[in-house]
Image 1 (cartoon, rainbow, N blue to C red):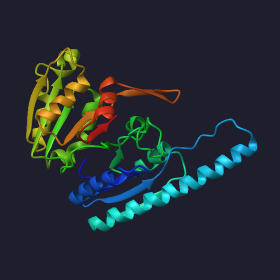
Image 2 (image 1 turned 90 degrees about the vertical axis):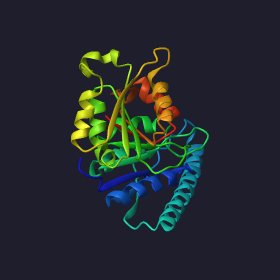
Image 3 (image 1 turned 135 degrees about the horizontal axis):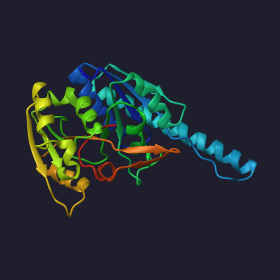
Length: 278
């Protein structure tokens, strides 16, 4: 990938939605990109009540969703006013949020979404951010709901396991990696996939990145008594990383998504933005 020129931001009714838009504006400013801000919520579900009760509930839900939409638009307008950013447009999706994002992501270089917080209603299903990386076919930047706000992409940690998904994530992140002050490639417990890594875990991907002008350091991290997801978070803290790049592992069967344990841990406990590809 050369540069990010079209960025799709998913905007919901949650109070942290402006934070992901601010991050998208930061990235768009670096690359001269256009932002499409898509407001879309998950489809409402109706319980099995009588017709009259269902009709009343439907009207109440509609009023509430219109109020949420108006509030979200105000937040979007205020964010653009503060930043002075002009290459942005507001879109409203009528389909379910996941379907709407997946459709419009076809015309974007990068998709930006937010981590969900069960205590802060946002209007999207709790598995939304787990589903998006597997559905869109584009790199997905997941922004935490609580983290130390810093410029993104100065110190990057790549979680490397020599998989197809990890390779895709590295390729998709190249526009950011080329501009990073330093990139740390970390192989976590590489003996688990020894054949894929080659003789020296991380050496081949480091050579690939060096040829692209990326300043890179390679290391391995072994803590057999700690799951890899928490190892990754610990290493990100040690390195003061402001971005994690990793593959999103999982599969879809009968619309039920089962993600790998590392991906699940990151999405639940992330402390820095994570760029994922599948």
